Each structure stands twice: as C-alpha cells, then as structure tokens.
Image (cartoon, protein in one colour):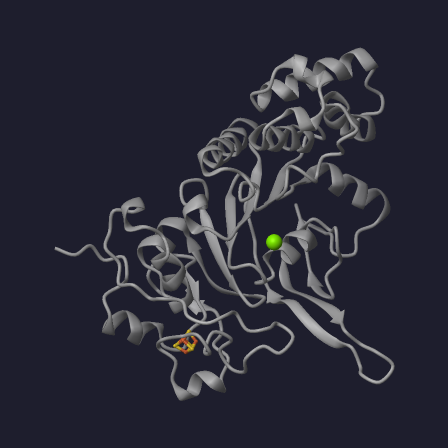
Length: 331
Ligand code: SF4
Ligand code: MG
C-alpha cells in the first residue's frame, strides 16, 4: 500500500464547511507472503481505518494498493469478489460481529455458499466440521448458537468463518482486546499456528505492544494517522528510536521483557486529528521536543541500526546518544 490517505467529513452545516478529519495520512506499508505485520497505536491513531481500507471495506481518498501484483484500490466486480475471498477480516468484538440468530454451522458455512456454491450440502457440512476442528472446536458445536459460547470460543468461530473462503491474507482488528487476558494468549497462539500451517499472511492491529511481540515479524507504530516508526519486531522492542515508541514500551511491565528501561511517560491526550499539531505531530507530548519540531515535519528515514528500521524523528541520533536506549540492560 502506498501513500494511503483517508479523509472523513465531520460536522458541517449550512453555515460552516465540514471539517476534514484525516484519519490516515500518507501511509505506505507492505507485507510479504507468510509474514506477520503488526500495526500498533493508541485508540484514534487511524489503525482501524487503515485496516478497513486494506480490506477495501472503505475506499482510500487517495493512494494506491496492490495485492499480489494487482492494483486493488479501485477494484470492483469480479476482482473485488476475488479479493473478498483472498482477504478476510477478524473483528475486534466477537460478541457483536456474529449474527446471534445463526447457528455456528450456518455462520461458518455461509462464506462457503458464497465462495464455493458448487459444493454439495453434505460436503459443506464436513468442511464446516473441518474448519471448526482447525480452530479447536468440535463438530457438535455447529448446531449451537453464539450466545452459548465464551468470548474466546466466539472469536474462534469468527476465525473459522474467516478461514472458510480459503484466504491468503487475514487482517485482525484488535482480535483479542475484547477477551479476558487469560484467553488472549490462546487466541494469539491459534492465529500464529494457523498462519504457519496454512501459509497465511497476517496483519494484526493492536493497541498493546506486548500482545504482538511473539507473533509478529515486523511492527509499524502509528500516531495521529501516520506511521512514525517501523521495523523488525525484535529491533523495535530492543532498539526503539522514536520517543513515542519508547513511551509505549515504557508502559509494558519490565518483567515481560527482562530489561530495565529508561521510563518515558506518555503525558497528555492525543490531539484531535481534525486539527493535528504542526511540524512533528508528536511535539505536543514529546519530552525531547525542540523549537524546530513545531515547524518541520520529520520524514520516515532509516535508522541505520537494522535493515527496514525507520523512524520519523529529527533527532533520534542525538536522543539515542544522550540517553542509553530505553531497553539497554543495566548492570
Ligand atoms: Fe520529539 Fe521532535 Fe522527534 Fe518529534 S521530531 S519525536 S517532537 S524530538
Ligand atoms: Mg479501533
């Protein structure tokens, strides 16, 4: 995906022109086959809008998207139907994303009817049983209804439904954030396991870095509609360069990564995307901000510390030299 932007008109009346909310601003991302990309940020950073654009549930205002070498940002008709088969979405809330009046068998079987209408009913039933087994549910569950299941089981049903069309790419919008902490890891492990067994490509949206640490190959950190840092997951965790990423990492309990970090508290609220700060969009909350940061917008540039590691901060070299990297072990 290149230079993706998505605007929403908000407000607006007879007397005032609607304001433009730029939810996603010039984002470029790519994910390789079989790879897991995590997109991380606070609520309101534009990550869900980005995920919906990638799925073509909403169209980009501008920018280009390619899937397996094909231009898809304006796809329609047959191309769009093929995309609907190849790319599937897992929703944040397993409680509201499943129709309560449909049995589990119908919920999982419905995409089969759409994408493989030639399949006889009997074959469809055994395919449903196979899909349920893949997500750790039993064939008997097909006759039951969503309300009879726990949150974690409902998310498994959502995953089985997503797998039914035989997708190549699955996008999960905070797929575990509505679940109890105790079941989050199970669902994450299931997704990682399915990815490996079925050769899937995953894009996982999360607000919590800890959740994606062990399953993602690469991380893109978003702030106010823009990617402000991206790189290989281990590199982002051990060698973050953008002060915002450092602040997000500061919020993770030290016990979970075994290092002592310099703490960078994240103060203040995220500014409104309707009226984003000038220059570096993080300057209103950045402990390292200088005068220049208010006027000049920092481009994403290579950090030089690992291939593919890029950060959008004017001063990351100086910041890294001044303070030891937040992840440096102390002895
Ligand atoms: Fe902070 Fe300035 Fe870097 Fe932005 S460019 S992250 S305000 S130091
Ligand atoms: Mg969201």
